[in-house]
Image (cartoon, rainbow over all chains, first blue to last red; front, top):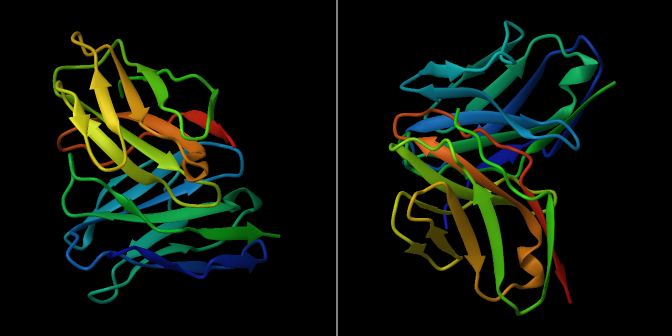
Amino acid sequence: EPEVTQTPSHQVTQMGQEVILRCVPISNHLYFYWYRQILGQKVEFLVSFYNNEISEKSEIFDDQFSVERPDGSNFTLKIRSTKLEDSAMYFCASSEDRGLFEQFFGPGTRLTVL
Amino acid sequence: DAKTTQPNSMESNEEEPVHLPCNHSTISGTDYIHWYRQLPSQGPEYVIHGLTSNVNNRMASLAIAEDRKSSTLILHRATLRDAAVYYCILYNFGNEKLTFGTGTRLTIIP
């Protein structure tokens, strides 16, 4: 069964450093998403991406964040200058289309900012 | 976004049916009811969705009240693998994002 994959599974970084989280969505999917979950809290939407551009973003997704689909398979989330409060699980998801279609989530990358 | 209300936690015995309730009294006519679950240390996983009629799939059944103000996710025979947080989410066609609440933490007792 096709699945969303994410690398690395765990990333440790120093405050102020840039990090790039990588995702490989399911191959025939058109919509891509990033969500995050701070330990013990709700899963929060960050951004959706379609046709090589951001489709919707949340208030969390400020200028420190960016997304990119550098080739036909990868989807990345970059945090330019990490803060302590960016420590969280980051989940990538993809769907065939938006709206009713289910979103398939990856296993997540745990980001720890020291 | 329309709001859903779920119990914080529930327990069930293994191999028995589980009924997970969700209230959504402000649901609009175009909102679909989606259920996702999150197993420990994993990403969320789609379970089932419906609009008005009851729905069945290999994982679960979804029973929707006639007035659509509530729904119940039914796991017919719970296993230890079903221990997870279950989220009831209202989702509109054309919507970009899933809005997760705190969900119901389901514990399965062996």
